[in-house]
Image (tube, rainbow, N blue to C red):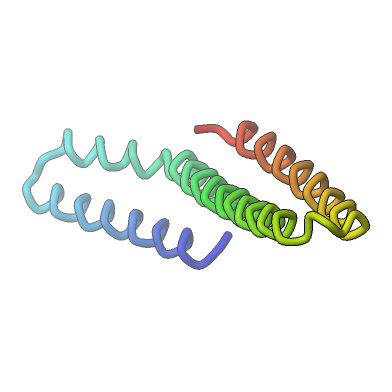
Length: 112
């Protein structure tokens, strides 16, 4: 788990504990029970945060691959006469496209 996710989890727990203490001060037992129920579902919250972070990282990788592909397209335009170099670029592009498909599969496998 990365530091950002850990900080979000810690803040979520602290916020709920603060609300729980406030509900105790107010004497609102229904609110107290509601907060305790939310705290008991912490694992679901943590999992959702982790999945969101994973998707964010995967989309970052996807974007990086797209940028590399655009750079290779530019190289193809400027070196179109050199067939050996063009073949090398095409092989690089195929590999990047394969990686991009793998990332898409991973993104789809992560719960929304």
